[in-house]
Structures are given as structure tokens and as C-alpha cells.
Image 1 (spheres, rainbow over the protein chains, first blue to last red):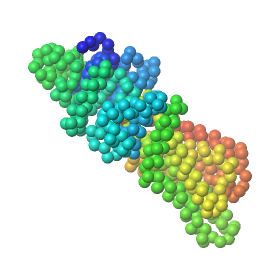
Image 2: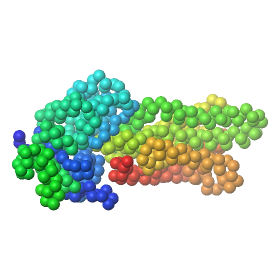
Image 3: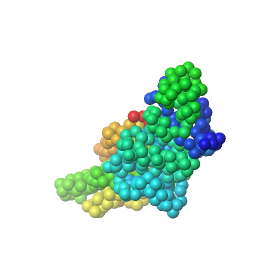
Image 4: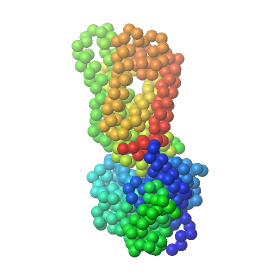
Length: 250
Length: 249
């Protein structure tokens, strides 16, 4: 796979919340046509990094470039270029998936007729047709996740950012999501997702970025990381990098 | 920009309208004034007493109705949005936080307007007394102020329950000011007519008696109220820029 086109580029990202330093120095690239997994223990800075990439939080230092565009020129550049499914589905209980997708599409400036077609396309793609006109209040976790994913995909973003997307899902939903991400990746999208489940990352990711204590400690393909750490499994490599890596960030 | 504001406002109106429990509660609060005053009117037979007792009561209830109408939407669209974590996904869209806030504010103001209209329709049907249409330029800024202050307070709260507590207290403000204006011998002279809420009570009272509105006082009151509404909105927009408000538990 060709990784020369880097669609999400993060340079020396820093973020402080009061007296707590969430990010010290996070740098990595996530290329087009690949699924990049962001790995790290709780508090490593995964969610904060993804929130900054989605434009929800402002970085304390450093830079995020998406499709070569920086938010310094256009404050809403990240929101235009990235589809985000962050740590919570955050649906409107009194609205239906169709209404939520339409609201989202209108905010993205999609013209009316094209938006109707796109909503149909997304509901079909995610298998939401049977519940498209039901209010989301009593949705299952899988239906909620699919609706939130549809919202992230409505503007056909080239870059998709997902924070622990499989949390709380049953096995069929996890499998369905995995297939969806692979199909989206195969269509050429850049997918960046965080997880602390190593099996999930091994099964899905073309590249892995490991964070520890707000720093990037390693990045590369799973095989390359195992070789560099002299480990047989990604789990061993993760442990090796997050233990040694605190002192020697890559 | 305006387009984004209207899209947000439309969504909030739809969402607010579907919250039937809140709609029923708002309707009852708005009609509480006409209901209470009509019961009091049963004990007042003399025409002069009627003017002295019922009209001040009506003006206070009308003032409160302007604040009650949008309360549920304000607490749900800001504090509720934070509580159910739907604010974060909303911020992943290409819309500025000020536009989001303005959209929500418009929706809250619309519900406040409906509350006020219901109240006035109730009085019109029961007592054939409606403030002069000339008061509209003054009442619109009052709705703007009510919505802006409710939105601002909602940004200070972490959840719906907290917002409900503080917004219920806010509704007491026009009630207390209105009662003060009605009963205090200190009120009603000089600069009171330029003071938001207090001036509105005086204008509504005068309007219901059929007295003509003072154009200069109405203009100054409208400007002062609009400025205050703007300041409340700016304070709310400032809150929405804070990481703690977006992500705070």
C-alpha cells in the first residue's frame, strides 16, 4: 500500500487542562486509504488528540493539518474535512436518524436534493432503513452507533476519526462496524481510530500510533513495530514501547 | 452565517415542540395568569377596583409569561445538550459556536414569544384587554432578553436539573420586579421606566389601561433591553469557548 499521501498530519501537539498536561508532544501521520489505530493506556492522550483533530478542542501548541489544510487559515477547516465519531453518540432522542442526518448534512451545506439522496445512501449503507423514521430514544447501542457513524459520514469526508467506536457494542455490531470501516478504507478514505483493545487494532489497522503519557512513542505497521521492539505480538510491542518509550519518544 | 443560525434554530424548535411534557407545562404556565386573574375578578365587582386590582396583576403575569415560555427549551438545548453529550458531536460540524448559540437563542425567543402570545390571548378572551400594538417594539427586546439570559444561565449549569433550579429562580425575577413596581411607593417615578423588566411592567400596565405609550421612553427601554440581551449572549458565547463547558462533566 502506498503511504506517500498523508491526509492527517499532527505535529508536536500539546494540550493542557488547568494544571493537568494531557498532551506533551504528539506527532504522527495517518495516510489515505489506510486505517490508522491510535493505541494507548487510559489517560495517554488518545481522546484529546482526536478531539483536537475534529476541531472540538483547540490545541495548546503544535499543529494539525488535514488534506494539507490548517485551521489557522480557516477556523472550521477541520470540521469541513473530517467526519468525527467521538466518545459518545450524543443523539437527539426526539429526532429520527433521517432527521439527525438531514440536520447534520444541512450544517455541512449539502444542497437539499443531494442531501435527500445522500441520506438514503447512508441509511442503506449502514442498514438503518428499518429504523430511519423512528425516534432514537429507544435505540439499541448498535443502532445508536450506526446513526452516529452516519452523521460522521454524511458529508462524505475523506477523513474519518473514531474514538473507541466499538465500546459497548455486541459482537455482531462490532463485526458489522469492522466491515464498514474496511469498505470505507477501500474506497480511499483515511481512517483514524482509537482503541485500547489490541486484538481489535491488530485485526483492523494498517498502521499503529502508540501514545504514552501525552507523547508519541512509536508509529508504523504492526509488523514493523513488533520487529523494532523485538516482540512476537503487538501486545508485547505495546508494553515494550510504553515502558521504555516514556523516556525515549520516537 | 445566517443560514447556519436558522438551521440550528429550526432543529431546536422541532426538538422543543416534540417535548410534549415541556410544551404542556409551558402552556399551563402561560395561561396561569388569565386563570388566576379571572378567579380574582369574581371577587371584584366595582369597575374602579377592577382597574386598580386586576390590571396590575395582569401586567405581572404577562411579564412572567415572557420568561416562562422559553425556559424548557433553554435548559434542554444548552445544559441538556451538555448532559447527553450531544454538544460535542454538534461541534464537529462546520458551524461557529456563536452561530450555534444564536440559533438556540432564536428558538428560545420563539418559544418565549408563543408563551407571551398565549398569555395575552387568554387575557384578551377573558377581559377584552390587550396591550396596544405600539408596545410590540418594546416587547420584542424583552423576549430577546428573556431568551438570552436563560441561555446564559444554562451555559453555567452542568445538567438539566441544575439548569431547571436556576432558571426557575430567574422566572422569579420578573415576578418580584413586577410586584415591586405594583406595590412599592418608591417605584414608577423617573428612571424606572427606562429599566428593563421594570419599565416593561409599567408599559404593559399603561397599555392595558389604554393609555398611550411614551415613544421616547419606549425607545430608550428597547435599546437598553437589547444591549442587556446582547451582553448576556456574549457572556454565553464566551462560556461555550471553554473546554470545561464542552467536556466538563
